[in-house]
Amino acid sequence: MSVENKVKEYILENYLFTDDMSALGDDDSFIEKGIIDSTGILEVIFFLEETFGIAVEDDEMIPENFDSVNNIAAFISKKTAS
Image (cartoon, rainbow, N blue to C red; front, side, top):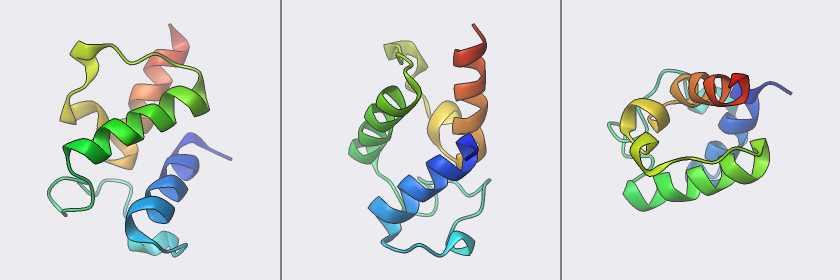
């Protein structure tokens, strides 16, 4: 399963309470659409650290890294490549 699909499934199950993959676009902003608030972003970060074995530094906790499925996938790709 791709990073995008793992992240999307987590968001759909935990914040939108559906398994309908069409309910969330890969570029949809979690904050602008009211899907996740700042507390939810922290929960997403914990999920990412546990699932992908990465560590998220304080200065990396910015919307540009975690505000959409594609932003998260790009962030994970960058973290796992280094």
